[in-house]
Amino acid sequence: MSDESNESKPLTELLAEQSIRLESSATGRDDAIRQAGQALLDAGAIDASYIDAMLERENSVSTYVGEGVAIPHGTLAGKEAVKSDALSVIRFPDTVDWDGNEVSVAVGIAAKGNGHIALLSQLATILLDSEKAAALRGATTPEKVYELLASEDEDE
Image (cartoon, rainbow, N blue to C red; front, side):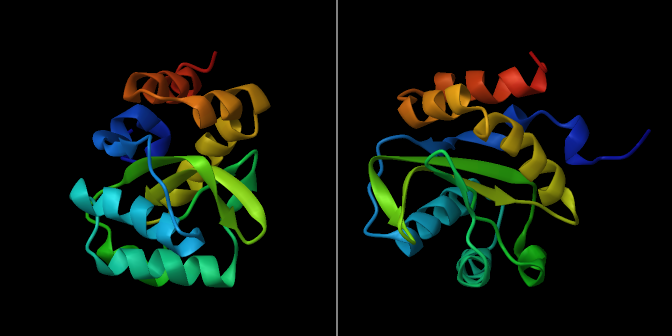
């Protein structure tokens, strides 16, 4: 199979170490989304316009998924701004008010084509496990973040 979909690519390969920011603070939801997008931009995965697409998506449907986690990603129209599939993990130890929900971790997603669907389902498996979500909220090192994402790749 020459299919280059995300399902064959481990989540850990989509996450550059510079895209993991574990001691962030944000003034609110939009600031948190901009930070998740900036980490993707800094990794070279997106054009700056994708951050606007992430904010646009959030204004139409919340990306808060529960367990103190949000997964901001762009709109379909924003896909042209994606250079390569990537993730960012931004941790807010003091939490961010996300439309009335307290968010500790924002996982930014950039994906070409329909890749975000596979990424979202892989991430949801981790984030809907309350123990893994708690471990991610408490992660203080990039190694711990990789370990949590790798545990899904290995299907423990």
